[in-house]
Image 1: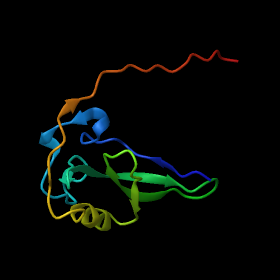
Image 2 (image 1 turned 90 degrees about the horizontal axis):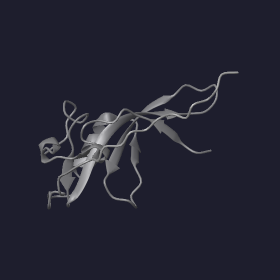
Image 3 (image 1 turned 90 degrees about the vertical axis):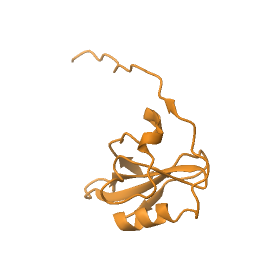
Image 4 (image 1 turned 135 degrees about the vertical axis):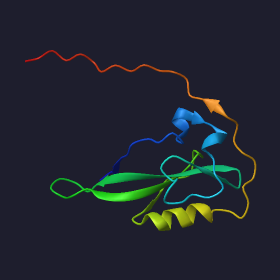
Length: 116
């Protein structure tokens, strides 16, 4: 069974681009939803998500630690403070910030389905 997560993307998500304005020294309960950090040159952020348990089971709230690296999977935490501590302790130093960029515009439409 594949795990399915749903989340609302924050302004720090790289899909919207990377801005140094959204990078802070440390993630806290007050800023994790719209800020990111850099540790060891890696862009790291935390987002709140719902983990779908399957049919007839209640969805579970989890916190995902995301790293802007292709081969690294998201770390899942059931407690926000654990996710923040893990992110802030990823490395002892920040390293180089990633280059800033803006996400390109794209327009998506849903396919038309005729009514029955």
